[in-house]
Amino acid sequence: MLRPRLWVSLVPYGIGRTKPNHYVEILRTVWDNRHDLPYAWRILSQGVCDGCALGVAGFRDWTMEGVHLCTTRLDLLKLNTARALDPQVLADVARLPRSAAALRKLGRLPYPMVRRRGEPGFRRISWDSALDLAASRIRGTTPDRIGIYLTARGLTNETYYAAQKVARFIGTNNIDNAARVCHAPSTGALKQAIGVAATTCSYRDVIESDLVVLFGADVANAQPVFMKYLYLARKRGTKVVVVNPLREPGLEHYWVPSSLESALFGTKIADAFFGIHTGGDLAFLRGVTKILFEEGGVDDGFVRERTTGFAAHPLTI
Image (cartoon, one colour):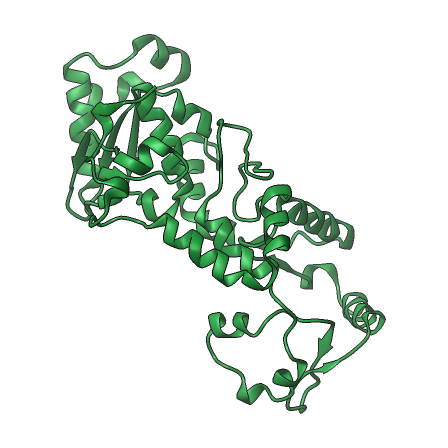
C-alpha cells in the first residue's frame, strides 16, 4: 500500500538532493566486475552475504520480504571476482604501492608465497611447503603465544566459526576480529548498563516498534542496510526520533533503491530531530526522563517486574 504522507517530493529519485546515489553504485559495481559478470552474478544470487550477519542468502534475508542487497555487499564483490596478480610485482616490495586500496587493486594471490629475511620480495612456494611452515611455527611455540585475527568484511559467518574451532583445537583463546574491536565501546557500555554485552533487539523488533530512537548514530551512511528496515517500519506507522549533533540529510529523507515507491518519491524518515550539542547527551536524557516521570510516562508494572532499586533513584524523588 502506498504512503503518500511519507513522500519527500515528486522528483524521481530525488534528483538534485544531497543523498546516497545507490544506482550509480550499482553501475560502478558492474564496471568493477566487468571481467567476470556471470561469476559475480552467481555470487550474489546463490552465495551468502560476506558483509553482515543478517543471514542473507542470494537476494533474500530471514527478516523481511523483498530484495535485500546492500552497497556493502556490492563493494566487497570485486574482492571475490578479483583476478590473480602478476607475481613479478611482488619480487621487490620496495616498489609496491603504500596504500591498502592500491595493493588490493593489484589482484589476489594466485598461490602461496613467502619472503625470507633479507630477500627483496616474495617467491612462490608449494601448498605443502606453506602448510609445513605454518605448522612448524605453531608447534614451535606455546598456545598462549598464538593469536588469530580476522577481518570484519569479506568473510562469511562460516569462516569465523571454523576459525574459532581451530583456535580451540590449538588450545588458545587469543582469537579476535575487527568487528569486535569496532563494537567494543558499545558492548562495554551494554555490559555495564544492562548486564548483556550484545544488543537485546532484532531488526524484526524495529519493524514492529511504535517508536525508534536513533541516538548518536548516522545509520544512513554507516549502516545503510538498516534504512530499509526503517522504511518498512515507517510504512507500518512507526515514529522515528533522531538525537545527534549532526543533522544528517539521509536521516531526514531517504530513497530506498529496492522499493519503487521510495525510489521514486523518497521517504520521510525522522518525525523529530534533536540537534543536541556535543557532550549534551546526558543532560538531554535526564531532561527527557524527568518529563516522563512528571507526565506519568513510566510503566510501573514493568518497572516492578524487571528492575530493582528504582524507588531509590534520584530521578524518582
